[in-house]
Amino acid sequence: MMNKPLVRAVLLIFAGAVLTGAGYFAGTRNAATKADASMSPAAKAAPGDRVDPKTGRKVLYWHDPMVPNQHFDKPGKSPFMDMQLEPVYADEGGGSTGIKIDPGLQQNLGIRYATVKREETTEEFDAVGTTQFDESKVDVVQTRVTGYIDRLYASAPMQRIAKAAPIASLYVPDWLAPQEEYLSLKRGAMDAGLLEASRARMRALSIPENVIAALDRTGKAQTHIVLSSPEAGVVSELNVRDGAMVTPGQTLAKVAGLSKLWLIVEIPESLALTVQPGMTVDATFSGDPSQHFKGQIREILPGVSTTSRTVQARLEIDNAALKLTPGMLMRVRVAAQKPVSRLLVPSEAVITTGKRSVVIAKNADGRLQPVNVTVGNDVGNFTEIRSGLNDGQAVVASGQFLIDSEASLKSVLPRLEGSGAGASAPDAASSSSVAQAYETTGKVEKVTPNDITFSHQPVPALGWGPMTMSFGKPAPDAFPDVKPGQTVHFVFKQSDDGYQLTKVEPAGGAK
Image (cartoon, rainbow, N blue to C red):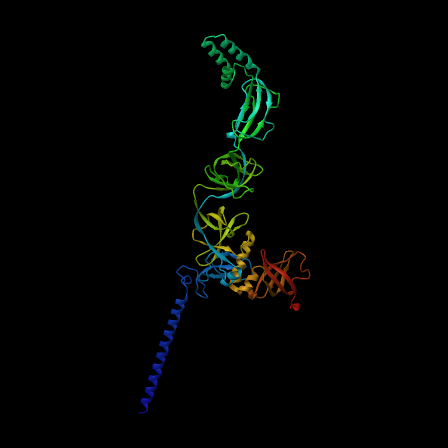
């Protein structure tokens, strides 16, 4: 009877041990399953991948945080500093390009995005032009005989003149003899053949038909002829004076019409290849901006002005109302005949560094990345992008970090990334413009004119452990009392040239 309770107790103890073991096995397996489920696909190590032996996570590469651009395939001691290399894990996004900015920081910086879009636009641009006489419409007043200016009606160049208005009266003594001969033959009742021969001789001497007709009608010889203007306009040239002798073929005056004028448009050299004959021009002048004068470019004149670096385009404009005069300065808008498809971004989104043009593009994962682009012409408030971007891509249109210096661009973007990850939005906004100061204590190992080497304690703000490294001095004669072997408290900040010391004092005087 005493053996039954003992047996029952042994069986209960054995059953409890079995249940405890089963529970432990199930819990361990469930924890492993959850750990695998929580691990991102990028962090799961495949055969052949680099794995951190401490955490089992997939490692992209190892690097020295002080020299982040130098990557290593295996762990070890940094060749730059007295510290161990640190791993960069796949699940930390180390393989992504660009930077990640905290959303709160983006709002505080006023970052605004725009979409790259393709539109049909015309080759429009503004230029200046000058009106000139239409040289193809200029009439030349010449004489075909030898004579003398009996009276000059036109008094000076640039004088306005009407059509058929007299310019000069010419006395031609050589006309007297052939006319008297013709009248003698006519009075002598000579046959028609002799009279026709005499008329032919007068025509050969450039006697006009109306003078010959008047000779038949009146029977009196004429030795004067009045030269008149063939067109209304201005006397652009006047080459004779009263009493002057003229010879056959001599130009007495030139008359330029005003109903048609030339407009010479100054095209910037950078746009010379885009301008073609047939492009439409709309011109106005300051005297009456409401009046528009339109035309089409007829030809591009060869040569570039060495002073203004422009190419001249010539067109004809209508001036039937005589509102324009030669020499007027016109504001010109040149437009192409056909629209052209262009990829456009807001002009404020383009950063010009002097050596290249950069646009900050937003990747699909939300990271910002500088992209080199080739820009074309400006279209209003937009700029044409010829290469570097795609239609529908998002770019940064405005933000405090959109600056025009390539060196500043390289230094500001990493600071923005660090500020967004490790600080609140207001602190990050201020740290983008003022470098944060760090401090620690260390032993002076070496002093040179350019830097001081410390074996210093950890810097938690930067995630540094104890290490030995050098810090730059602001000037060769800075901190003259610092000697090797001293224990000091020092303050430093990050600059474009590395880490710069701002304060060094004995450890006992640290505040």
